[in-house]
Image 1 (cartoon, one colour):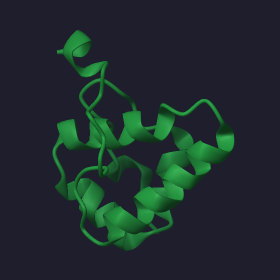
Image 2 (cartoon, one colour; image 1 turned 90 degrees about the vertical axis):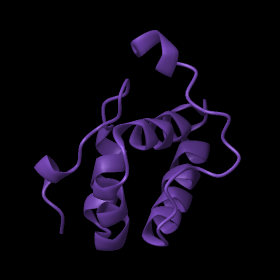
Image 3 (cartoon, helix red, strand yellow; image 1 turned 90 degrees about the horizontal axis):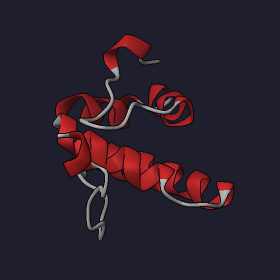
Length: 88
């Protein structure tokens, strides 16, 4: 179990509760999360929160946990957070 205080958000996006809960349940994914940059965390958060359907969001959280657990630092095939430039 990973403590909530160890999981920071991104440069523009705060860490949503559902993604934080999922990360706390996976030591491997949480370790990668803590190791990646705030900009990379921002990309993951935006990718997870961008779908309109809750089912798609749940699938992205599951895939994200698996990918982060394997050490992947960015979501695959994601053009990047469209909100980033507005927040920097």
